[in-house]
Amino acid sequence: MSTATLSIDLDAIAENWRALDRLTDAACQTAAVVKADAYGLGVGRVARALARAGARRFFVAVAEEGAAVREALGPGPQICVFSGHMAGDTEMIADLDLTPMLNSLDQLTRHLEALPGHAFGIQLDTGMNRLGMEAEEWSAVAEIVLPLNPVLLMSHLACADEPGHPMNARQLANFHALTDGTGVPRSLSATGGILLGPQYHFDLTRPGIGLYGGLPFAAAQPVVRLTLPVVQIRTLEPGETVGYGCSWTAEHPATIATVSGGYADGILRALSGRATLWAEDIACPIAGRVSMDLITVDVTHLPEPPRELDLICADQGIDALAEQAGTIAYEILTSLGPRYARRYGGASV
Ligand SMILES: *Cc1c(COP(=O)(O)O)cnc(C)c1O
Image (cartoon, rainbow, N blue to C red; front, side, top):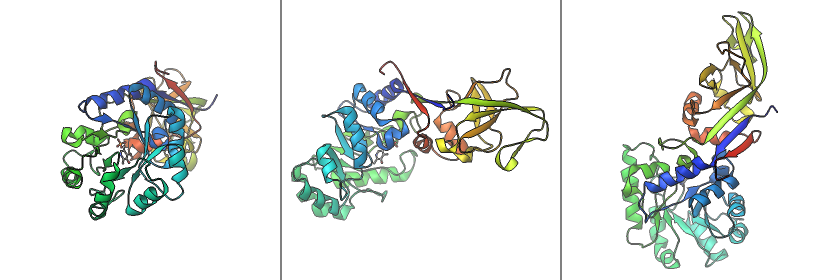
């Protein structure tokens, strides 16, 4: 088999959820963000593992994503939609029992007209200027909305991964100004906000990346391992080149392993000439460019030709790999392509 193997440790995801849950007090509920197919790891298996760990509320980006979560979890757990109630979503919201986080007066009107009595939350903008009602919009409708018992008032922090950033305190103050005294459950924090401390926790937190082993949750257990099989090994004379553009030249006699996996699998082309693969704990540099389906790796220094090499492993986690590509772990995970054999591990499988 030449497809690479993406191993996903469901126990580690569950343990990361419990660890983030322990960082807030007992009255604060810890939800789970499973948008974008659970950050690329497979929402069905991941959502079930999180539900077994104790998660009762899940967040997706768009209503369409709610279908797979509802199918995995069955009736009961609340599935909230960040993008709110868009035109065309009404049937999905009703049939799948989704809870839209309404972002504008348009959405509020649409929701109340199409599905009166159906649960909803309100998303407020506290400075990020991405999603949510502005302060003026909210003050215009709060009196109408609050008696309808919204399930949540939420906002999102722009700079929570930088604890010293003044934007955090500014958004916190804005959130208080918009929501104090409403009596409605409130949520401000994703992974980064949980780590900022108790004043950011309110009634519910919404971790995503921390569940999947990424920064800023430095204490997270690693979740993902990516192992690429070696398709072919060859030896090069000094002066021979490797791959597209002849960008790597052998300076000494060299051994090159061609492994299965490329930018079509989310192994970003920006890793060309930079990234390292691993034979157990021995680093092996990429030789030349990442191509669509294959990567060439310098394995000259290995005692034996390898049968497989790891790109994501204990020696090189998702954030270390992201740094080599000039990106963040979120993008590494959500780029992982459909071609991998996904293997789910952990005792709870
Ligand atoms: C993606 C997202 C989250 C989760 O963020 P992480 O940084 O992955 O923990 C929470 N809330 C909103 C509104 C989001 O868009």
